[in-house]
Amino acid sequence: MTGFKKGDKHQNTPTQGYSEEEDLALFQNAMQGVTRLATDNKVHATPSQPKAKKLKHLQMQPESHLQFDFNVHAADNTQSVGTDEYLMFHRKGLRLQELSRLKKGEFQVEAVLDLHGLIVDIADQQLKAFIHQAWSKKCRFLLIIHGKGYNSEAGHPILKNLVNQRLQQYPKVLAFCSALPKDGSTGAVYVFLKAQ
Image (cartoon, rainbow, N blue to C red; front, side, top):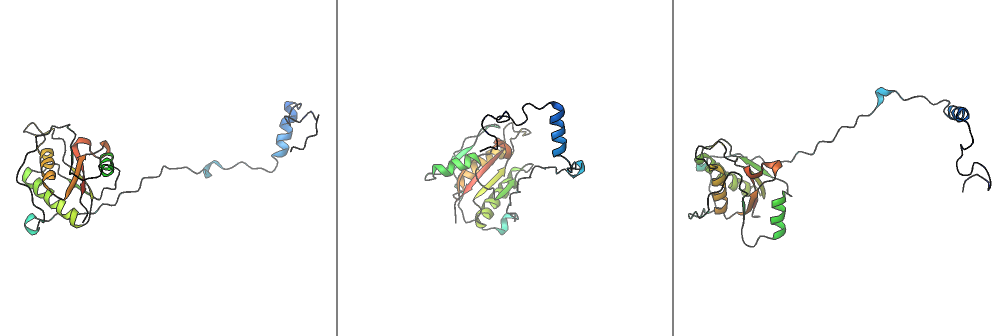
């Protein structure tokens, strides 16, 4: 309840009926002893940076020192893919929720492999070593950057096709798909490995 009595002319608006001079005088009287804040003490808000993802650094070892405990299927029945073609592969039994998370990039990338600029044989060795080491270190979600092959002398993306074929041959790979634009779009793939 307000401090106004019924019928008081100031019931609805306390300053109603005062002239501008009276309003100014009331304001100045109320502000006596108040000092202006120094402008150099302003707090400048800076946008917070997103926390950097902790990636497991996998030391690539020469293939001769690795013992791959997975069998690469000899049969290659995958078709060639184009530069901007979206890649998608999953094994039977993978839950739809997990596949959906993979496609939306809703996971913490645990290890990254960049194959840019490598010749096919070296890229193939690096890919095998990477998958093996990631699985042995209990990584489940990976990002492999293969590029789009715009500068390929063959006229099609060689490394993209290599990654597409090889990942389908590794039993430890449950699924993979082209990445979101922030992670390379059709020039990279998210990979989901089996749990140990």
